[in-house]
Image (cartoon, rainbow, N blue to C red; front, side):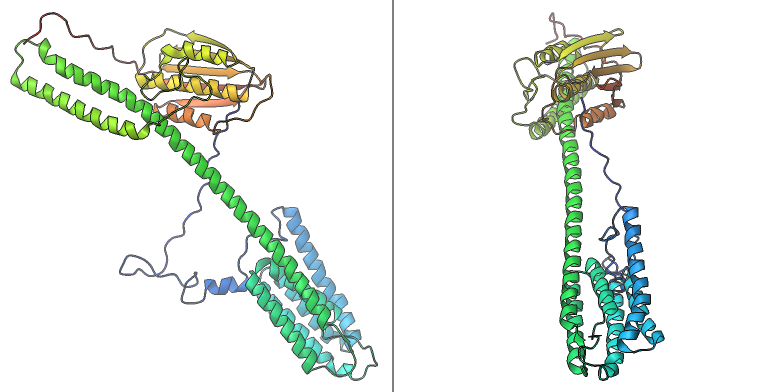
Amino acid sequence: MTPADPSPSPTPAPVPAESGHPRSDGTRTPAPGSDGAPFGRGRLRRWLGEAPTRHSPPFSRYRWARLLAYLLIGWTALAIALAGGVDVSESYDLEYSTALLATSLQAVAIVLAVRRPVPAWALSLAAATVTALLARPHLQSVPASGPDWPWSTPTLLAHTTVLLLLALRVRLGGTLTVLAVTTVVTCLVRVGAAVGHYSGTGTVAVSLFGIATAVGGTLRSRQEARTELVQQTTITAEERARRTLLEERSRIARELHDVVAHHMSVISIQAQVAPHLVKDPSEELLENLAGIRGNALEALTELRRVLGVLRSENPEDPYGLGAPGTGAAPDAPQPTLARLDGLVENTRAAGLDVTAKAVGEVRPYAPGVELSAYRIIQEALSNALRHAPGSRVHVEVGHFPDGLRLVVTNSPPQRPVPPSPGAGHGLLGMRERAAMLGGHVLAERTPGGGFSVTAHLPGDIAPNPPDQPPTGEQSP
């Protein structure tokens, strides 16, 4: 028997303290720097970083994957700064220090793109444009098929990396904007500053930039969809657990209302009979008894209205553990431990080898205690039928000075476990019933592979049943 217990609801994140200035209607103006603040929209989206989730690609939830991504980005930046500086210096006949400065800016842009992709893109594009303009005089003195221009190989790789990191963090609209600006700048440089001989790389560069942004945008969309699915699944599970809890409490309320209605009926009858048991009752006594009876009848009327709302139209018992041959009809008397033998017989008929034993001296208990004890044993046997078909089940009811001790233990299943038709929250109802009475329930696996449910209910002894009114001479 392995009833699913609802996972505890996650603790909600703390709500930040209110900020801003109070208004006349009791609300507050947004604090500067927050969304909707007068001084920047979210501090310009946290300085154009968009503050994505910490698990956004390529930054996995696994530490080793994040470290590998950071290491790869660092090595890429270092290679472009050093090896790229040599390549730019030789291709464009620039001083090595100037070329190293240009490629170092590209390396800084790659590292900066991890946290601030939009400023990193602006830095990379500016450095590439300046490098292309500095190489322009050299293009007039080279023979045909000159160097790559306006995008050299190091700057092309650096800017592609920056755009990929930007697409992973910035929304689609921002990504398309920076791609369009990069394309326009490339066209302007090539058309407006082209002189001499060179191998044009504008078309290849724009194509690579488009591929990088497409890959980054796809990975970002996939991560957002996965995150939304996880959140929706979590919300659905929480709502299901909350609904099951409310349904179980409603069921407990229906049964306890029956118990209360019984006691109110007894009070009403006793108040009606009491004047006939006293010779020459005083007017004051008659008036008080009439008031007691009136209040009891009024309470019964209100209880009937509540019960009409709480009771289901056609309640069912899917495992046939109610009264023999019937379900749990709305107007059936609430079960007590006296009906435990019938419950055990029904469970045996359903295919379980059940043994029951009573320990201690049997004594009367409050109706709520007996009802809860019966329902806990019933639910434990139902769970054994669901999750341990063909097992041996032992039920022990212990009567002790401090209350009832219920133990239901089953062996491992002897047949394949079919899909359960239940909601998977059997332990929830048991614990609710026990907690309502000040008791507790412990459910755990046994060393042999079975399952055990142990419940303790405080044993408030029920009052003796009232004496029946005499059938002899009564006052007129």
